[in-house]
Length: 221
Image (cartoon, rainbow, N blue to C red; front, side, top):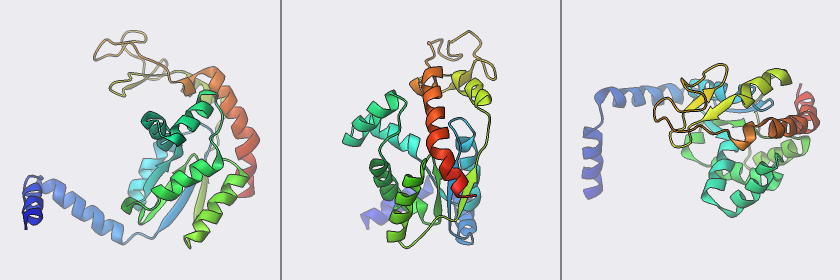
């Protein structure tokens, strides 16, 4: 009874509009077909921007391997330590480690209607490993969406990005510059650039994409 009472109190403190919004969302989601989608494209091509739109429209969970790996790095898990070594060099994390993360993430309740895979697979071998894992679960990928964009545009987008680490506020030297160069508008603290956003690391990541991921992309056309 205590748990029931506690739940009632929690619900009483939630705004009616929020309760109704969640109820309507769940009713809408119940009519949506299951979907399992892969987004393919080089870093900075817009996968992360479009993923939330697709996620909300079809009630899917968003599995961004980059975010999951960064979380593992921050937590200093065994996987995170290995991932950090590769990410610092601009290299790719091993297939088996990433497939293991995805396998676990797909079991979450939020993935009941399906998922969007963002940043994986990157190679034909990874796609085969993913197919094998999904096959064991009795399911498969429904759609692969390809994001095509020139390297020069990607370099301008990515190398111009700077962030305020404590708040997560993001700036761009050309498209959304801070009021004072390389300083956060709100706190006045210095901005930093992620290692992944430097020209040297981006060059390595793009070379890896063209060498390893493009064959997978064309094999799905």
